Amino acid sequence: MKKNIMDMNEHVIQTINLTKEYGELRAVDNVSLSIGRGEIFGLLGPNGAGKSTTIMMLTTLLKPSSGRAEICGYDVVKEPNKVRKSISVVFQDHTSDEWLTGWEYLRLHAGIYNSSEARIQELLILFNLKEWKDTPIKQYSSGMRRRLEIARGLVHHPEVLFLDEPTLGLDIQTRLKIWSYIESLSREEDVTIFLTTHYMEEADKLCDRIAIIDDGKIVAIGSSEELKSVLNSNLITVKVKNPGDMMQILSVLGMESEIQGNSIQIHTTNAGISEIYDVVRDMQNDVELFNVKKPTLDDVFIYYTGKEIRDEASEHRRHPLMRRGFI
Ligand SMILES: Nc1ncnc2c1ncn2[C@@H]1O[C@H](COP(=O)(O)OP(=O)(O)O)[C@@H](O)[C@H]1O
Ligand SMILES: [Mg+2]
Image 1 (cartoon, rainbow, N blue to C red):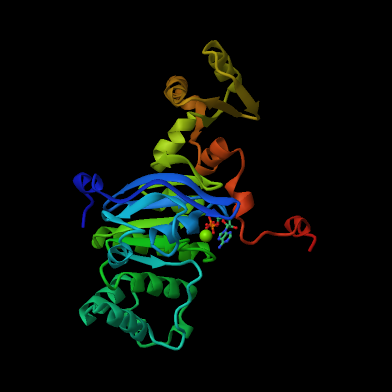
Image 2: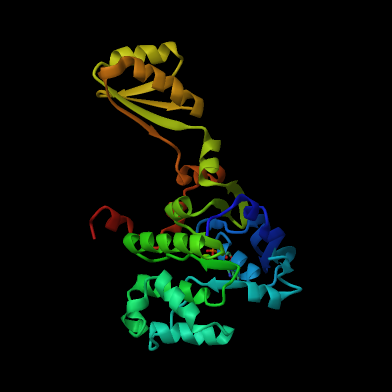
C-alpha cells in the first residue's frame, strides 16, 4: 500500500513529556513525539540513551514516572489492553523457540491471537520463509530467525510494530536484507513502524523520520535530509589540471581552500555549492573530479551531543592493541 500524506497526518503515536526514572537516574527525560500512520520512525542513539525504556513504556510493559503516551488514541497507562491489541513488539534479544519449525512457531502465536492460517501463509511469503516453514528454527540462519520474529509480530495485524534494535549483531549483508524486508512490509502492510537503533546507516536508509536521543533527551528530530541540512556544511573536493588558477578564483570569491597535490578541498555552506559549481563549469575540461561530501548522521550526532555515536555504540569494543594489529 502506498503511503499518503493524509494518513501521515493522523498521529498513531503521541507522547507528551514522557519520563522514566530508575531511582536517581532519569533514563527517559521529557520525550514528546508525534508519529503519523504509515511512518517508519527511528529512535537513534548510543547504548544507554533510553531507547528500550521508551519502547517498554509505549508498549505498556513499563509505567512512566511522569508524562503521557497514547497509541492509536489509547492511553498506555489507563487503557493498556486496548493498546496491546493495536501493537506488537519485537525485542532485541528475543530468541525463537528453537525446537519448533517456522510454521509451528507462527501457528502458536496465531493461535494466541485467533489469526488464520491464511495470514501465516501470507507472512511466510512476505518474509521469504515459505520453503523453510517445516525446518526447525535451530537450523535457521540469524537473518532468517530475525525475519521469523518480525513475522511473528505481525500475525494479528497490529497497527503499530515496535522493533527494538532489529538488526543488532547481524552482519552487514544480513542487515541490508532485513532493511529491505522492513521496507516491503511498510509498503504492503498498513503498519506504522517504530524502531530503535544505534546504527546510523539503518536510521539513514530506512526511516522516514529520525529522533536522535542522548541521555534520555531528544536532541533533534526530522528526516535524515532535514537533520543534515541544519549543519549547512559540506566538503567539496575538486581535482584540476591547474590548481593554482582555481585557488585564485576561490580567493577572489572569498572562499578558503586547501590544496593537496592536484586536489583542492573547500568547506562551504549549502549555498556555496552552486557558486563553486559555477566556477568548475567555467573551467570545463581542466576539471578531473568534482565531489561534494554532504554531512552524515554521524556529523549531526556530533553537532548536537559533542560526541560520536560510534565510540559508545560499538558492540565489539576492541582492545587498543588489537586495533593496531598487535594481538
Ligand atoms: N531496570 C533498570 N533499572 C535501572 N536502570 C536501568 C534499568 N533499565 C535500564 N536502565 C538504565 O537506563 C538507561 C537507559 O537504558 P535503556 O533504555 O536500556 O537504553 P538503550 O536501549 O538506549 O541502550 C541506562 O543508563 C540503563 O543502564
Ligand atoms: Mg536497548
